[in-house]
Length: 135
Image (cartoon, rainbow, N blue to C red; front, side):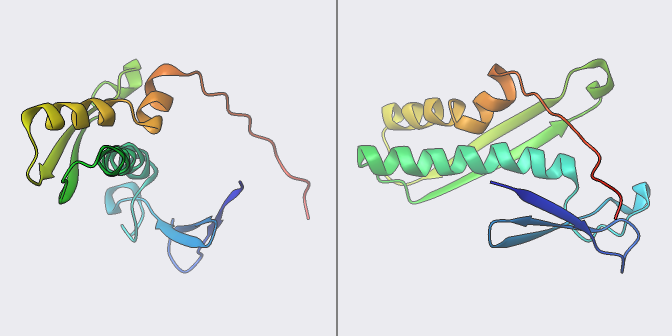
């Protein structure tokens, strides 16, 4: 899969990310020189793990036949030590439905094992960046 990010020159920093048939506006905050016309890259990173946890819980609950009505994940970022190599995300799972404590615990465990959580914490990501030929 290829994701393409193209500059929207109508604003100072805004870009449009194209993911399959979806478009996502990405921008810097006003303090960074942007117009806050969309989430920034860190926001998308944080949202990815949050969304993955929510989707994983719904998938697991359906598989097990658990009566989950609603799933909400809130995430708090602490980037104060990012330049020292530590980026902290605190996620909280909010579940509604007639769930037992055992089911709730299983759903929490499933959320902690979502693929993006694993990707962020348990694998080495290798990124290469090349420069395309000048037009």
